[in-house]
Length: 420
Image (cartoon, rainbow, N blue to C red; front, side, top):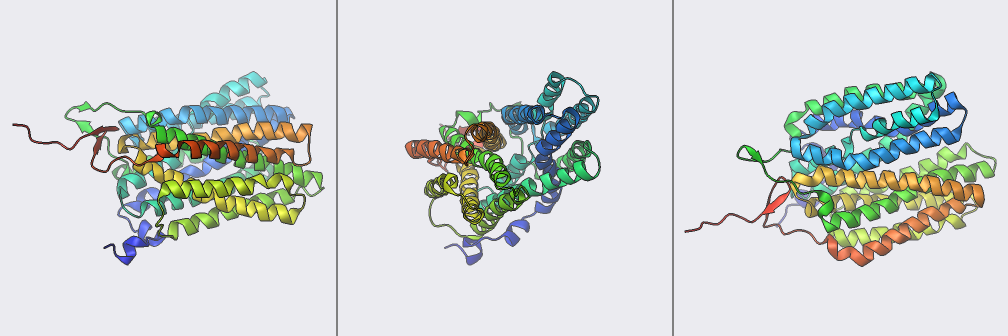
């Protein structure tokens, strides 16, 4: 029978895992630029061009490039090791970000900015997925895995809250280019420190002197189902960002936008902390369905809210429903995906959130411009409804893989038997 500590793992026990602090601290520093990038680009390009449309286009190209290239970065990290991918990646990202800054300050044409935005987004280091892969390698089948997933979710939320605040302060109080320059510098420094923690990176499995064939995480049906569900979560983030800004501007209180979005983020962080401290007796597949149904229900009510208090309350509930869905989805990766493909799987999910967010920002903006009256809030409702329908129809594909199999470089192999 499991002990009390094992059945109710907490954050203290998680952080006492051997070697945890050697990658937790540099990982936290290295992932902060992730939350700074979009805001820094928007503020710099808008300042130099005077156009929000140009600023939005540059930010969108960066986000889409990141979403499309991140899984391949994760696949390379699984195959060759995180350090091999990180070091050239952070250098390329820092140089691309500085090049984009120089082009914007020199008032280069929009096509040149968009061209520079592609490598800037494509080389964005995937520290979050790499952190999750390290926890998975350290903990394996430990009951601490859901706690680690919750810890990472809360850290992500801190990144999304602190990063934009830091970027905005730098761009407005120091210089419009200060945000992007700082983002590039922090990426380089934090990424190199994270890469230096070699002992905690997931092992690269070898078969003699040859690498065993690697299987892409995208070929696993359960991963594809999770990608759709995370696209829906991204639609909530993007739809709320645009629609909350439009709502507060329509009532003449634009300053309330930060308060309302902060309430939403606070709900996410608080529920993430709680999820990590609970010893769940219900399986992760059922938990994901329940959490996603609750997220869809609460997100579907946003468009009907016409007061600050009601919107704040609903935003808090939506945030509280997002964390369990995110955490459970990431937890399922550990049981669905072989160890040799988990970094790639995590980057697919992170990229799905970013892609869903980029699409939602665009659609919600068009709805708000064309119809107003909270029309942008229809995006979170539509995105989660479509994702929930997919999840319910294909939930059988989230069945966990057998535990009697061992893994090398992402390919399952039967336990060896003696042959006469």
